[in-house]
Image 1 (cartoon, rainbow, N blue to C red):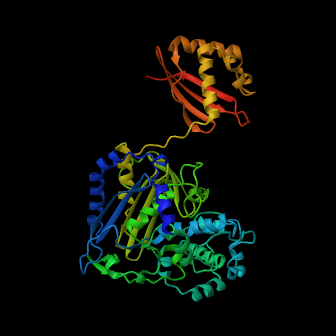
Image 2 (image 1 turned 135 degrees about the vertical axis):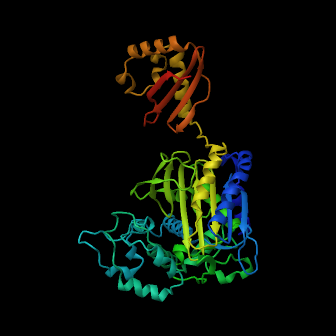
Image 3 (image 1 turned 90 degrees about the horizontal axis):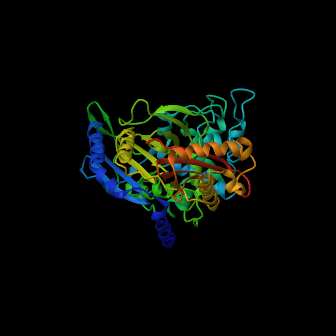
Length: 498
């Protein structure tokens, strides 16, 4: 096991897979520390820890306040927090691992593995029955149950079995819209247990936490000394009150995990290591392709405002719930995966930026005090500091050949100079004579160009480039055809604005 962990951590730290500028991250840290320090004080949270993961490792972690008010133990990277609904990603990835192994399909009916659901009543005669996929994306027709669901964590398995057998009313027909359901993730926990033949928590601990070296993480909080735990509090009537500690039970799959910043950083590094797709050997407990499935949205897309204070009102996100992650395209940050955690005594938030290999997370020990605002403001601060550097796609041989052909075309002023590189539609869309006229006009404006500069791949079969010329610059794009030789189906060239 130790050898596996060592190999995995070496893989996650591979610099070729990541591109964040750590010097610029370091320069932004004082301002980011202030964001979280102010949040800890203003939100009346006894303690807080946050971390930044980049280039496959925890590059910054800092604690504020105390993990308990009786002994005033300071929060450290090893303090243990319940992370509430951020647990759901561990549940989702466990389902995806079982799928990867051929032990279930996402389109299987949930009742195939939870027979107590076979007698459920559906809201309409044409309602489809609940699939595993529907449970993952909170589109199973179950009612939003955040206030109720959080308190069900210690529910005994036998009581949950009775609840399932009795059936529950559905809020809507399955697969028709998004509605957040902790109950649904408890059902996923039961599916994991029934398919794997072991308790849910044992499956996650053996197949995810252990291989990732997360030795301080688990579901039964009493297994760790109280001296390491961040005690959960609520802020009420102008003072802090201790929240009861909930034991592990049937609803642990929706929010029961306890972990530390040091451990959770390993999880974040592992998730981020799944991007971009590549030929490297697999080193994690689940394939990179399965991890990337967390970003598959449910197609119930909504417009949303970015968390925090850093985004202008015009910065709207197109967001959907994927598999245990809220997936959004952000105007500044690109693809983001995020999830909050709210729980009696705890709040948390995580946001990932796969395009840059960077993740930010925060844990607090105050009821429903997630910290989404400072987490997203921290991400924008890194972006504005220039610390987020997009990974460059490799240029495939097919794209390199097409790019060289584009250079020959411009130099000759004639598309027929690279006729063999043109797809069958190319001269049908614009004939050689019209190409000659437009190339002559462009060369008259730009002059001779140095066409040996780099091409930036936007895909395996597409790219963009800029040529320096005698009288300015020419910008171009290439799109290749979906044929074996991938000839040029479209070439665009134009003067680049000064």
